[in-house]
Length: 65
Image 1 (tube, rainbow, N blue to C red):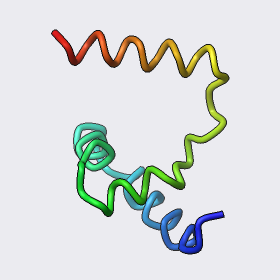
Image 2 (spheres, helix red, strand yellow; image 1 turned 45 degrees about the vertical axis):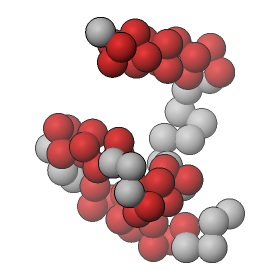
Image 3 (tube, rainbow, N blue to C red; image 1 turned 135 degrees about the vertical axis):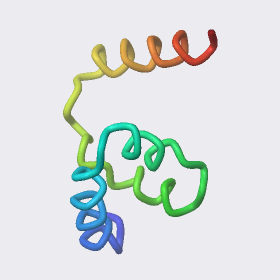
Image 4 (cartoon, rainbow, N blue to C red; image 1 turned 90 degrees about the vertical axis):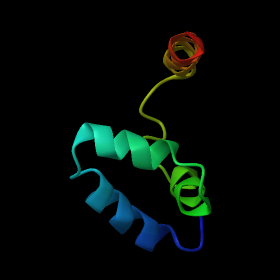
C-alpha cells in the first residue's frame, strides 16, 4: 500500500463531499497531488475489467469530439 495512503484517503473523503464538477476537475488535474490521489483511488475494484474498459472507451470517445 502507498506509504501515505491514510492521509490520501482522508483527502478523498473531503474531495467526495465536493460538487461533482469540482470533483471531476480535481481528479483530472495533471498536477502531482492529483496524480498521487489517483494512486489510492477509493474507486479501485468498483468495476470489473469489462466495465472499466467500457468506461475508458466511452471517455475517450466523448473527449475526442
